[in-house]
Length: 175
Image 1 (cartoon, rainbow, N blue to C red):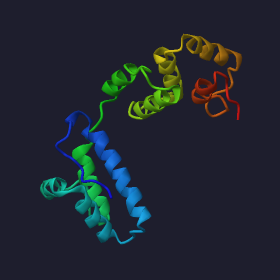
Image 2: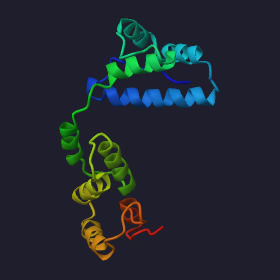
Image 3: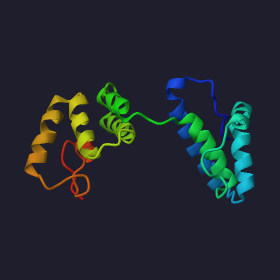
Image 4: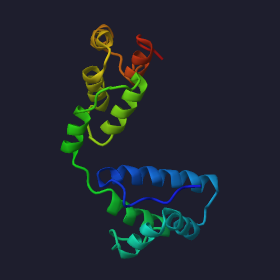
């Protein structure tokens, strides 16, 4: 079963924890085939725990709620509380501080993708590639990625070349 959401945990990553908890709830609701909107909203509040229930009772409306389902109202109000507007400049600062450390290449790339999603980059794949090169432990791999990019300038993530495929095998993956 899904544990209650801990609103008293570290406030610096409460937003991320809420998003993950809510995603888990959505999976649970689908898995249990809950289709009744009132039942889904009640289950969300029940499973989230008494602290979230008390908080919810104090939250004001978010925009025009008249055309929304009960579940949408509950989620919108809680999202508005737990996920304040993100500052893309600060998120980009955090993105630039990510290094591989003890992660595998795939784990490192996953962290980069998760962080990049918050940055609102126009060229997200290129930014991820650049930070992957900056933060990768393997100096040989750092040198090979840009060289391979020059050898195949028309290939990118959409056309069959990916940092993930390259990092895991040391070679470019062509789909």
